[in-house]
Amino acid sequence: MELKRLELNNHRNYAHLDLEPGPGVNVFVGANGQGKTNLLEAVAMLALSSSPRARRDQELLGPVTPAARIHAEVESAGRGLEVTITLQGEGERVRRVIEVDGVRRRGFDLPGHFRVTLFWPDDLGLVKAGPEQRRRFLNQMLVQVEPGYARNLAALRRVLEQRNSLLKRIAAGEEAPGVLEAWNAELVAYGSDIAGARARAVEELRPYAAESHAEIAAGERLEIAYIGPPENFGDAVEKSLGDDLRRGSTTIGPHHDDLLIRLDGRDARSYASQGQQRTAVVSLKLAEAALVTRRAGERPVLLLDDVLSELDAERRAALLRRVAGEGQVIITSAEMGPFPADLITGARVWSVNSGRIEACG
Amino acid sequence: MPQLPEPLERLISELSRLPGVGPKTAQRLAFHLLRADRQRAESLARAIVDMKLRIGFCERCYNIAEGSLCAICSSARRDTTLLCVVETPLDVLAVERTSEFAGLYFVLNGVISPIDGVGPDQLHVPQLLDRVRGDGVVEVIVATDADIEGEATAVYLQRALAPLGVEVTRPAHGLPVGGDLEYADELTVARAIVGRRSF
Image (tube, rainbow over all chains, first blue to last red; front, top):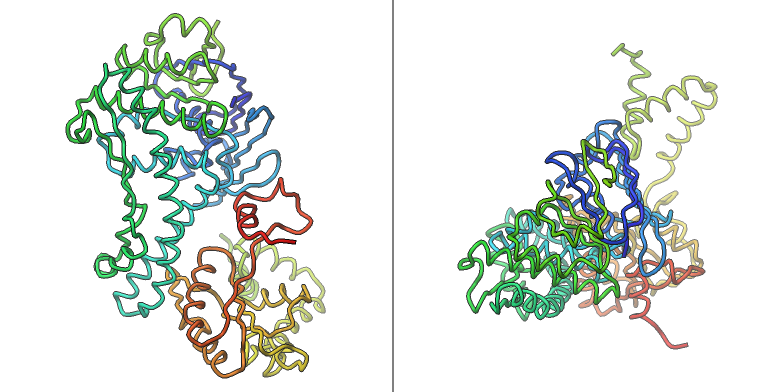
């Protein structure tokens, strides 16, 4: 997997960018606010179709015109692909048009063409954060390797909106409870697919994550487990009717899933020190890259946004040892300090300055 | 903004109520009609009024009809044991174009969508159940769209119709005819494989 060329027009603070990164390690250095994260965000969108951080597409539009464009030439499974994402502002709304080799695709059909593993400062809080962020971790990986997963997620979101709206209508006496069965069936159908994919993925991540963690943390045992919907999902949904009606929302389903993280047998969420948490996150991210590599048959492009400076020398070295030398890596950093000399020797270094990128040396 | 003459203003506001027509398009259309021959404008106005006067909905199936029954319901050559349930009259047209279906239709007039406040009673579901109870129907094909709301509506109808002793079916998913397997989306291919048949 390789990003051969990236063109940005009016994306965030990039008026125009035309970049040809190298096949190995690429380091983008610049002060804060110059556009390092914006660059990584654009690359991540090529893999995920939507921005992993913007709450509204509106934020992505630069100052020049109400339209933005991300265009990339990538190499995937030995063949060249062109991916284009165009955002067109229309009043309050933003229309997103996605094309792969000139053919229109829907948002949920883009992931899987170009794959990345994104690791950014937000992820450092993965262990202590709410379950939503851990579900996002699983989702971001799964949309890229599990056919139909992105579509199922979108469908589940819609089913929940409809079902929750129906619950409120039933509670208010505006609708008979009989209609609920149809939505329960949809919830269980899409929910089971999603839960199944997550359970398989966590099983697959487990040994990879444990191995990296033990290596970085002198034998400390990292265990992960998937906490999904109850065994008998369908019955549980029916039994939850009373609760659901009282709350006006769906209490059972994969939208409440979590990933349990244990260190030496204890729940990492309450016991782990900051250092231990970070080691666990690095291990999970390495496991993610390993899973994607195994499923896709080639390494994803690794995107490391300013996380190296957040890690101590030992964890940094462990991370870099695993990622450098194979496949394409895009790293951003505020300074050259955290990089070992041998990594830099083979790397391409670029400077980022108010939406302009130039090759250094 | 300078005020436009009242009749023009009124036309723009009427046009902009049409689906897919925004204020800009409405303005353009209105000015186009302003420049057009008087005959053209009158013919358009007459077409709209005639359509409203002469076309209504079929009493049996809620398809569009000139008179109390639509052309399909009043035909003697249709198989009355087969009933195809669709969302809109446009779907009737889509199935009719295939010439593959000789049964009768029933138009629901939408799909179940709680967000929009639409439940079975806002659709023609009670009428559908009455129809199936009384009319010698043997098989009901539920041909609602394959999206979330269409599927939920199909599940609902399946459960509501099953106790009435009719066979309830759903159109098959498959590969687009004449299409390249390579270019079909994954879910379509997956469903086509699951629903494969022997030669």
